[in-house]
Image (cartoon, rainbow, N blue to C red; front, side, top):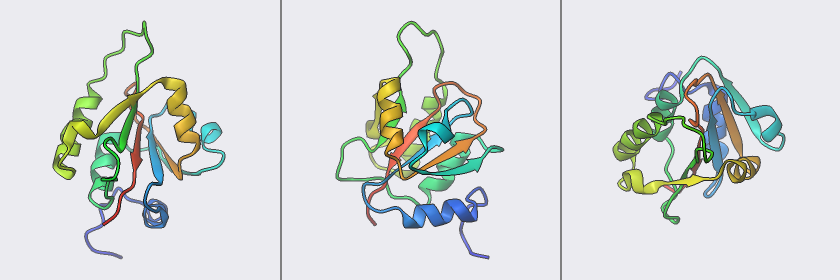
Length: 144
């Protein structure tokens, strides 16, 4: 056992977070995200019983966001014409304020299919049980 590792961080996820280098990305994917097909070149980690906000909080306790880019966090834009609300983004902003001085300023939004292309280049994708729509979030690792 290790001390001070959040219980939501599985051994596989901890290993992946350690393996990632500066500039590598990880996607925390909601339950609707095509994790396996998008993640063919990535490590796909199952975290079906968890929501993204609590997992994001646990990861950000260990994971430095990239300070060499203005916006190391990406969210999938709502498709034009879609009336879905995204209150989960406010949760993400609050968590980022706790873990990164930039807070909301660290977040950019990316068109849906561009997000998929970025996700295909990710080091890892964490497939969660998050039920909120447009809850996918991509994090770019920084240095300590």
